[in-house]
Length: 157
Image (cartoon, rainbow, N blue to C red; front, side, top):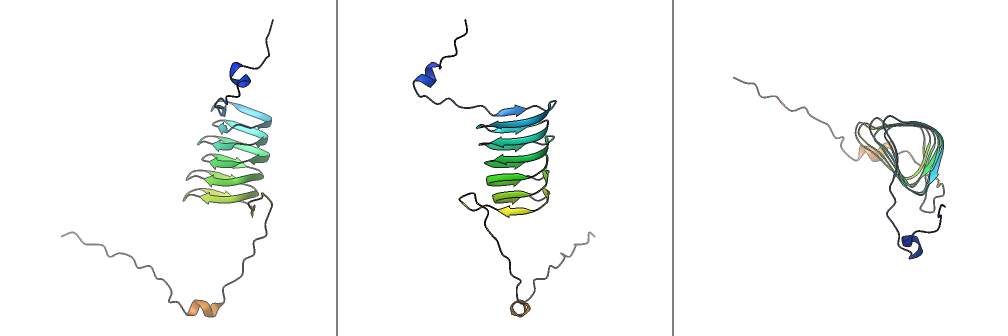
């Protein structure tokens, strides 16, 4: 007979650490992934993701998504599709993201690639309008331009 009652830890209200969900390098998943844990992708995933935790795409990992919703995303592999990220998006040196993103904060390392549009989420996870205004040319005239000068190479004798 199977016993599906709560574990001793659950009965006493002790929270157990939750292991992240891992999609291994040799695995290709299709469908809908949802939950309250972190998700680490070393393999390939196609479909939708809706999680409360972090999404980590490691080098060699790949997502072709119809939609991703997560708390934070850390991308070192390849990702495609619309993303809604409640906190921060971090695209690492060899990571690449193609698609539209709604996010509270974004960081792209040198070498990381982002191709798409980005909308900023406010602290209440609502889209907020960001307006940019051009700088008046006369304000630039007040400051001298910064000119980079190449270093002189020392000749060996």
